[in-house]
Image (tube, rainbow, N blue to C red; front, side, top):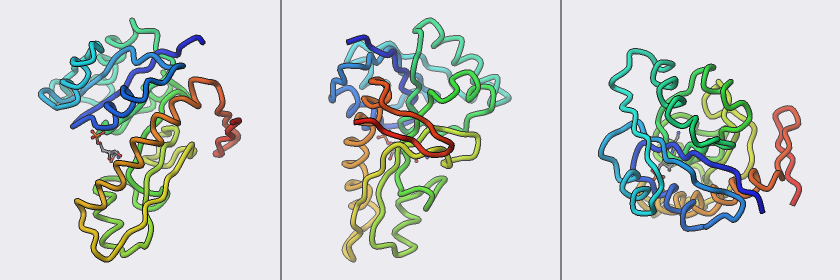
Length: 200
Ligand code: GAR
């Protein structure tokens, strides 16, 4: 099976990166991990598995686009077919989105369109929803609003704290992110307006 070269973008602990690595998707080659924050655990995870890391410290740049141009220059040599945002905490500009049009996906810790932005698990808990979850979606200019590929539901109990709920949401993220990558790399996702059609 031919493999799609995947760039995984991270900013933090990298548990989703780890799940993608561990799931050993046959149709995907994790060609590079791109990171905007020095010293994070995700870098260690990548190195441990012999995956090249391209670190571009976002603090060294005046604008988001300048930062992106630098990161694109670094990942260009890997012939990337899919960009996966796995806990990458930066909003992308039209420049980057155009450069990888319809080839950028993101994992978000809520059932979008509920609770976009940051602290989504906290937001869900405070709102009192009975179910939350996670979403993998194509990335568009409007934050957390792109076409939805997969979602998973997590029940919220009265005993849940932010920590316990986060743990349950993470477990589902670690399941659906690799699955979405597999579907993309096997050519099973078709965009139809803002809908994603999946051929299983
Ligand atoms: C994940 O829960 C992911 O959904 C979230 O950051 C976490 C990263 O964890 N992303 C966002 O909130 C994006 N808006 P990880 O570094 O352990 O994979």
